[in-house]
Length: 86
Image (tube, rainbow, N blue to C red; front, side, top):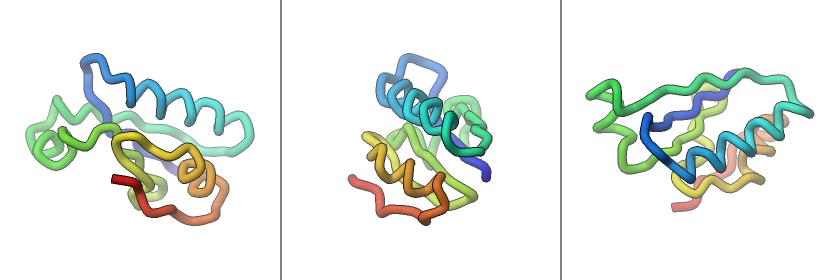
């Protein structure tokens, strides 16, 4: 399972929160996390800059902004994705 965390290189409390949830989930579920800094790629900045953090699991968006920890758990436990809160 592959998890991508779209984040930024500057301070981002919501990104830190999602990172902590993912770290906790890795204790019980096998997956890798790739962090992508959107502010280093103009195309990604246009797509994600106002939505970070954005989390994808196996290519499907699970959530953005204030990501629901239950959505992360459901996605990494193989339960599919949960509609993100806006």
